[in-house]
Image 1 (cartoon, helix red, strand yellow):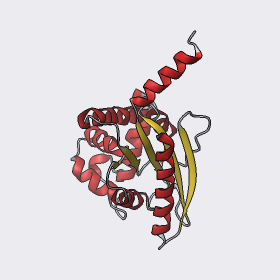
Image 2 (image 1 turned 135 degrees about the horizontal axis):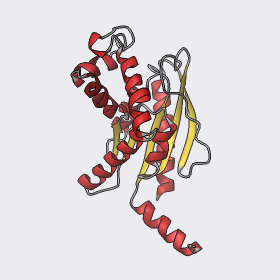
Image 3 (image 1 turned 180 degrees about the vertical axis):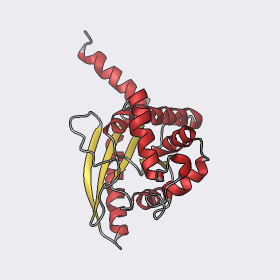
Image 4 (image 1 turned 90 degrees about the vertical axis):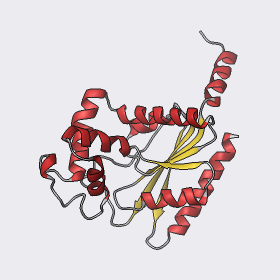
Length: 218
């Protein structure tokens, strides 16, 4: 049985091997996640990077259907086409339907709910190695699964889930949903209500939350 001091030392060493903060933007399609994430990396240009869990899903889906990944990404990221154009090479599914099918019906049943979260954890570890530095943070613009959050606690001291609410935007036709993490060490969450035409207010709120968390990591 580990002593109190042994556990404290172990936790300290574990934290030293982690980066500080992962911010997970958790909101329905079209609510402004990508715009907020991009604006955040512009406002904090040193040490904050934007990433997406779905980059691996694009590759897995393209491989499963045998289609060009760039073509898939074009349809999947086009606001008007991802839910309206059915693609014969993908069993006449829309891009969104194909991504959900591969994620929820193929990959997760075969490899587990935490497949994409664990894969991203390894990507972060590779970044830490390549940069020879753990002093960077990441903002994710597409969080929507608890398993992703739990995986990231292995490589970040604090994971902050920011639930985004905006009138007229809901999770219809999407496998993701709002995340309410409870009782997970190193995970916090908050709500941010977006108003059309007032993105600067949302950015200011995110920046304030970010620096508050950075202060706690020191």
